[in-house]
Length: 121
Picture (spheres, rainbow, N blue to C red):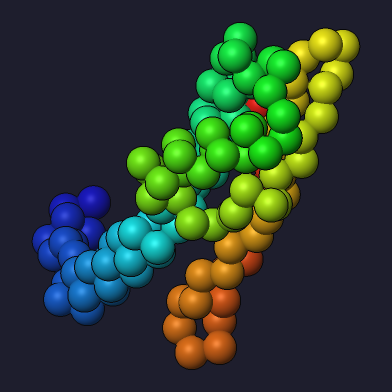
């Protein structure tokens, strides 16, 4: 038992370099992916806000899309346009939804594809 304890030295230089490289790669991947999820959450929040607004319940499709455009400009959302939004009335309630994908180039020809479906419900 004592002989094994003497031979243990801890982590070596190569181990530290490999761990640091893994942490750096995870951080870079996170910095590329997180904004796409934030924009999707913001779009869902905009959809919920518009759908719950009493003034929008009887609004025309053009007025609803204009409301989305104004709110999206405030949050710098450029992933979808107002033309990509599906607007419907279900049981007298306004419902907004869309479906889109985001391609994030990682390294060389490796690309990450994320698909989102934000909605007001």
